[in-house]
Structure formats: structure tokens, C-alpha cells
Image (tube, rainbow, N blue to C red; front, side, top):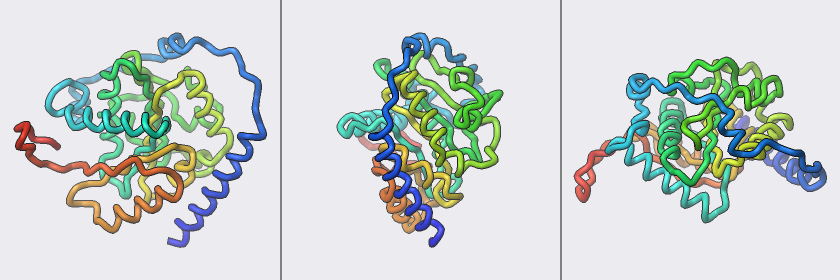
Length: 270
């Protein structure tokens, strides 16, 4: 608990410092590639429908199983719009709650939202799994992009015309330091400038694993906390909400892995 409090204090101090720095340092605008061309230049995601189904990416196809993710997508859009939020972290108190699978399903749900562009970045640099859920084998990692070794244009993937991905091919050697670095924040700002997504979703590490997430949460507008039904204790949910609220806004808590019947619709949701 002392380590968490120290990390929270450090993150708040860094957040205040960055806020002052942004007001003091304004660079002249640089010519950039048209947004449509930037998106078109991203390599398309190679879909393996059998692997997606096996990995429970159920929203990859329209139907009853996609309905809960479409509902969550719509709620995220609504909250983001009324609060003017653009950066959304997807986080969980513990390992195994399903945050990465939730983000993958949301990506396919957002792809069907024709008037929005969404960027999905895997910043769980200690134990990345989004590339496995999507059955992808990228040549580089987001760590290579954040430290400036690889341009996002050469690394990012595209689902359809409206959803982009930044994946990993393995864990990073120094995730906490990298996520706290000014270089990483500049890269994320540049991605937003180049691709102008309406929303950017970040998959970040579970709260109990390390201070990586605490280092990064200061850089987002809000967070969605994913918890597992009949697995995540209420005490852990309350603790996670308090930790996240110290650094950013809590958009909501999603109860995952929950099966129930909706009598009105006659549907069974998972």
C-alpha cells in the first residue's frame, strides 16, 4: 500500500509539472499528411475468423453475442461526448478480468460506427496479449514506437477504414520508465495529431501488477474499470475505483463474465 501511495504522489506531481510545461512550450505547427491518407496507409489487419471466435472476440460478427459490446460502445460514446473525453483507459483490478478481450470486442463494435475513428493501443507493456487475442504477429512493439525507434505509420494496423491498432510482440524491458517519459507522451500526441481519432482506447496493465498503470493514468481523460463477476471481490473493486479516481475520471465499472437473462428481450448476455 505504501508503494501505491508513493506512486500516486509521484504521478500527481508529474501531472502538474506536465500541465505547466504544456502552457510554456508551444511548437509551431508542421505540415502533415491528410488524415484520410494517413489512415489508408496503415497496413490492414489480417483477420482469422476462427481464431477470433476461439479467443471470444464475439463482436467481430453482427449478432446477439455482439449486442453487449455494442451497448457498451454506445455508452462510452455518450459519456465521452458529454464530457469532452478523448482518451479512455481500459483497466482492471487484477489479472484475468477480461479487459483485453473487452477492448478487442469494442474495436469491432466501433468499426461498425461509421461516423467515428478510433485508435486502440496496447500499453500493457509488461504482459501484452492484445496481439494474441487478435491472432496477429507484429514485427515491432508499441515500446519501439514510444521510444522513437519505429514510426507508428510503419507499425500500426487498420481494421476497416475507421479503427487503428498499435500492438506488441512481447514485453518491454522498462515499461514504467517508458510510460512516464516525455518522449512517450510526445509520441502519443503526435499519433493524435496525425490520425485525429475521435477516441483513443488504451489497454493498460492491471492495477495490482505494477505501477505502470499509475504512471500512465495521468495521461488519459478517463478510465473504464473491468471486473470479473463472482471473481473480483467488492473490496478490490472499491480500491481500484479509488486508485483510478486519484489520477483521472472513472467513466464506469463493467461487470464482465456475467451471465443473465433479459426477460424483456429474451436474450442471454455474457
